[in-house]
Image 1 (cartoon, helix red, strand yellow):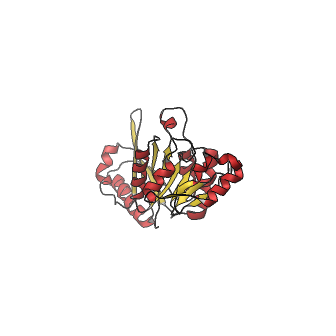
Image 2 (image 1 turned 60 degrees about the vertical axis):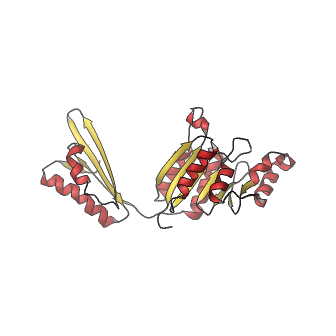
Image 3 (image 1 turned 180 degrees about the vertical axis):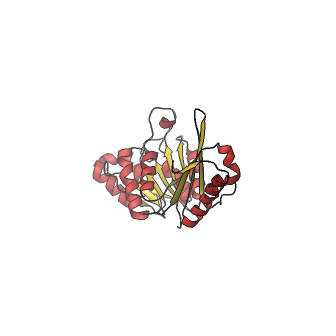
Length: 247
């Protein structure tokens, strides 16, 4: 995979109705940035089977996608993630994963029946992610799609395990920033000349009567970043508009 596109899918109606707050996105985002990666998208969604499948299918359609999914792999009736993952990524095929069953038995013994055993009913042909808290594993599909519990104390080590094993370091990204003392509108014609292979960010600010715009150009090709950044510096110098490098 040349350049992974990272997604997080955070499943939990209690997050949307305000009963709990999400801690997953900030953690994953921080770990990705440390390694030179970044998110393409993050979703917080309801515990709704068809909708979960729709979001998984959206992620799967991206050939460069890597997904971290949180929640819905427990033993209660509203834990839909395992089945949804099987439907989208394994044509609906599931099995009692032998190693997952062993791990659950190590933790609960015969109390794994009648309900906890369901946590070993996983899509076929998956890998497992270690649960350092309860011993009940998460799972991964095709080394790209990672499924963890909704509890951050359990999920975080699984995220680190996945990143350390499969996505240790991304491609270096280059970035240049300037602050122009003019309105954003003044720079729109220049913005329209920026190449598609770089990322453009424009942040207008107003302090009293002072207008300024922070322009950031970033990308994986240093020369391309420099060339597109020069579109702005050349324009500002030509128009005698004051600017500073950096924010």
